[in-house]
Image (tube, rainbow, N blue to C red; front, top):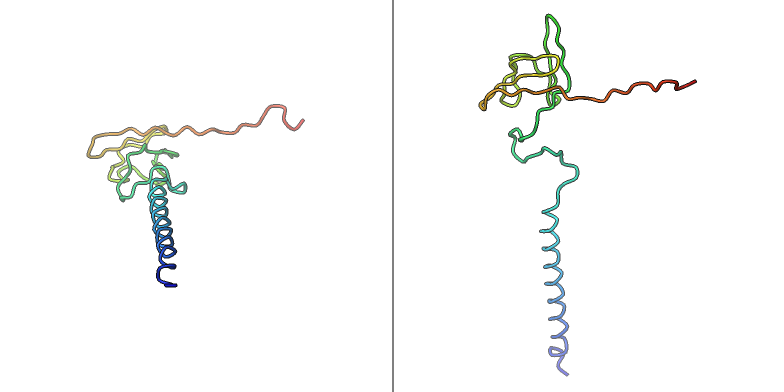
Length: 122
């Protein structure tokens, strides 16, 4: 018997199985590339530029000698800058920004405040 002829079909089937496995891996990797990363922030974009997302004004402090706001987690003062925008005015309920596209009013984000339930603990 010629061992070359007997082993040939097995080698071909092994090569075919390897090629099929490689093809399946490539298809799986391409499908995985389409999936969203669940740990990535919702407003994330690959570039360092500000994403087209709303501003989040979470806090303001307005007193006779001081006006401070927290926008997107960053503390800003009147005349200061955030993501290419200038802080024009800080009021108790909103902040007015100015940038290349004009003025933009950012309202204070409403936050739910927990209140004690009447009659609780009696």
